[in-house]
Every structure is written in C-alpha cells, then in structure tokens.
Length: 116
Length: 106
Image (cartoon, rainbow over the protein chains, first blue to last red):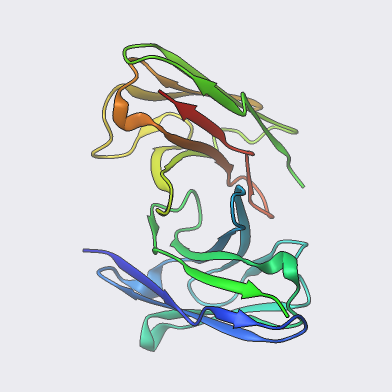
C-alpha cells in the first residue's frame, strides 16, 4: 500500500524558516517525481514544486521561487521542502504527492501557520 | 503560465441529476489534464487522468472528455457521496496549475 506521510509543519513567525519532510513507502520511490502542493485555509489547491526522480529537474511556482527549496533522499525514501523567508500568505496545508503528471497518491498534509 | 478557468464555481443539484463541470485552458494542453475530488479535511482524490481515463476504483458515473483547451467532467447520476469540491489540474507545462474549484452541493 502506497503511503505518503508529511511532517514538520507548525507555527512560525513571518520571516522564519521551516523544513517539511515526506516519508514514502509502498512503491519504488526512486522511480518517481514528487510534488508539493498547498492549500490555504478555505482556498483552492496550489502547486508548489516538483523534483524528478534523480533530482536533475526541479520546478517551482513563481510565488515560492527563491524562498523554497525542494530536495530528496532516495536512500531514505523521502522528499523535503525547505521554506525560508516565510510570509503570512504561505499559511496552508502542505501535501506531498507522487508523480510527474496528475499525481495519483497524496499524503494527508501538514499544516504550516505563519503568524506573529 | 497556463491559466485554468473552471466553471461554475459552485452548483446545487439533486440526487440523480447529470452534472457537468468545465475547465478551459489559456493555451492548448493536449490531453494533459486530471480531475480531482476533495472532501473537507481530506487530501484530493484523483478521478480522471489524461483527460478521459477513469482512475481504477472510481465509479463509472464519473467521466472526462476534451482535448486542447476545453475539458469536461461529467457526473451522470449524482449521488449523495459526490458532495465535494472538484478541481482540474494541467500537467502539460510548468508551473502546474489547478482550476479554482467547483463546489458541488446536493
């Protein structure tokens, strides 16, 4: 059974940093691209970033470019999102999701709250 | 960036009704589109991939169609469990973009 489990969310002050993790199991992690997608409270889905299976190709939404960094560790079946210079508008549930097309597997999400 | 315009933003329908949700892409995306269902407090669930391929395990009352710039998600006979918000997602180019969502109430 495929499982994606996010962790690392919490309350952080504006300008602060947070590192999210997503632990994968139940599939050959090193064969798949991974995404981060977020959803602000009461709002729609926003794609954040993708990293391909070998970390050769990385893409970001304009809203996070230069502040967020995606990475992965295939030996540990994990993908990460380093978030710096956080803003109030980054407050959201952050989901990791598998796949380079329309992701089929999603985690349950981790809540990031940016507030003073 | 490709913009995905989804309509309507919300709808109310009755059990057994046929429901249609539309996504329009600002430029051609071939059939690189997925449809998702999301219920409150839950992760999105993929219903349709490649515009028209039904995800395994998803009821056959759901169907997708379209190519290029116009796409449709149809629920042929609305059921109480279909109350949710539905999103389209283009994966033709980066950044990936979602439609704004359609809230379906029964």
